[in-house]
Length: 107
Image (cartoon, rainbow, N blue to C red; front, top):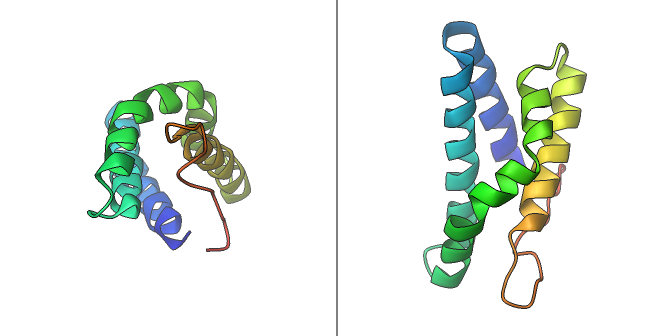
């Protein structure tokens, strides 16, 4: 997804100028906002699912987020961001347990 590249660039630039804790929080908020936007304003059930499930899904995949934040190379950043995104996307589910989102790194 192209938005992930924008998020990664934003986070990388923030890493050069800011506090790691604030950068991590900003990145989490960007991810959540992106998913809400991906739901579309015409799908309040999806938006509610993101709002209700994001924090728990983020916590479940936080090790990948932390590894992304601490990556020493672009290759490591890409790997950990993909693992985190894939995990969080597939964690947010509808009432039947089906994921609302599927991560496609080529989209």
